[in-house]
Length: 212
Image (cartoon, rainbow, N blue to C red):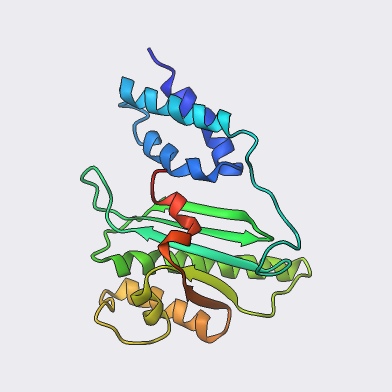
């Protein structure tokens, strides 16, 4: 008997709190809690070894050193179209940053099947926009109202054009996705968010959609 469940469970808390790059790997390992093999246990041990050897590398807020400015919130958003191991569902990740450090990091497999990479990106962009709206409301409640729009970085240009109201060949046709894209467009028009393109090479949220 291998203590696989205890091992994976023990790593979830540090992954959520300060080792964000481990969350995707642990989510894959967590899918085999009741049907794990020796190979899964060895991979879990590899994650534990990585977490221990990098224990001195954590999240650091660097007030005044962030090129975005002091107390400026910005978000990275990314999605991996289609799953692995015969699972067609995409995986999305968005990371909210403040003073050079992540304070909100969300990784989740989509509940519905996306039919294109643009749809997968729009799905996650909507989720990111909702969280940005919540953060902006929270900041206002504690007396730090955000006057300028919050930058959301995205690496899929067709989804950015759709959010800007431009008709493209990649435009979604399902009612659910139209509602979500219209909501993002509304937030762009209201200057709550400003969706900008960023190269995949510099996309921070890649750590939530790809195994390092």
